[in-house]
Image 1 (cartoon, rainbow, N blue to C red):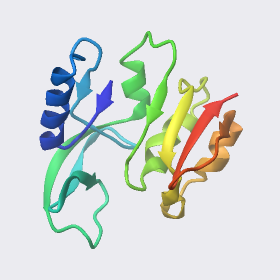
Image 2: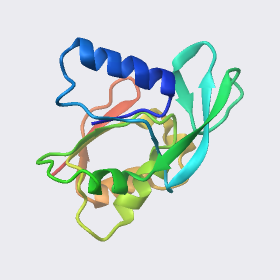
Image 3: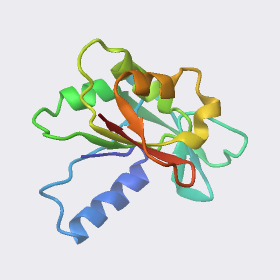
Length: 152
């Protein structure tokens, strides 16, 4: 499963999936992950269609589109049957918002492995690294601001 809120990138992703014969095993959801379901603005940068964020910043000189948001908990719950859940997340500094609900839930964490951009840790208002450790995740060495976590 892949999640991509930018309609232009959804089209490109679907084309690449088709070209590689992966249509039977990759389901693309045209949504954004956030801390609450609903709708929000996605800020798409003019110089790089692959770079977009739910958080506006001074570099934004592109356009803003409204996208549907889901929580990660809902996405995983709506897709039961995975033996192993591996999440690769690139949400431009909003990792804490996307992961907070699933990490604060009393239920067992459904994620087995997680790759996130920890270079954005200074932007987080939630103690994400501490909560990952408390939920049994061990950090592997970081590379270029990205860290892989695996549950013990």
